[in-house]
Image (tube, rainbow, N blue to C red; front, top):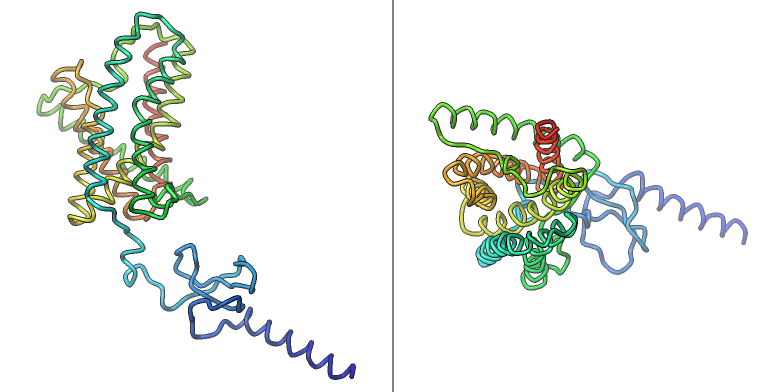
Length: 304
C-alpha cells in the first residue's frame, strides 16, 4: 500500500515537473481550471503558466505570438466619434477655463485655488468623456482602454523619447527663426501674480503631474486611436500632433502664438510616435513630464 502511494506521488511530481520544465508544444485556450501553459492574459508575446487556481510568474516562448500576426491587439482603435467628442470637449473646456479665470482673477484668491479651478474646468470634462467612451466602446477599464500602462523599462524609454522630441523641437525653432516666423514660449506670458513660491509650486504640479497624464490619455489615447480607425499611422500621428499644438494656442500672444503651436505640434508628433511604436502611453507620459519639467526649470531661472 505504501509503495502504491509513493508511486502515485512520484507520478504527480513527474507530471508537474514536465508541465513546468518542459512546456507542451500545443497551446490550447484555457478550459476549466486545468493547469498548463496558455497565451499570456496580459497580451504579451509569450505563454504564462496557469496552476489551476491563478496565473503564475512563470513564462515561456509562445511560437504563435508575434507583433505582425496580431496587429489589432498591438494597435487597437476606437470609433472616430471619440475623436470628435474629445477635441470639441477639450477646446470648449479650455476656452471656458480662460474666461472663468479672467472673470475671477480680480478676487485675488490664493494661487492654489486658481490652479485647482483651472485643472477641474480645463480637464474635468475630458476626463468624464474618457470615462464615457471606455464604457460605451471599451471594456470599462479606462486606463487599459486608452493604453495607459507602465513598465520599469519606461524609465529609460521616457527620457529617450524626450531627448528625440526636444531635438526635433530645437530644429523646428531654428527653422522658424530662419524664416522669421514669430515664436513665443507658453511660459513667457507675464502672470498677474508675482512669481512667488506658491505660484511656482502650483504651476509645477499642474504641468508635471496633471497635464502629462490627462493630455497623453486624450491625444495619444482617445484621439490617436480614433484617428487610426480612419487613416494610416503616419497621418494619424501627424494629425493628433497638430491638434495637440493647437490646444496650447494662447490668444493673447497674437501672431507670436503661431510658432508655439507649430513647435508643440512637433512635440505632439514625437510623443505620438513613441506611443505608437511602444504600444502604450506610459513612456510618453514620462517624456511629457520631463518636457514640462525642463521648460519650468528654464522659466524659473529667468524669473529669479
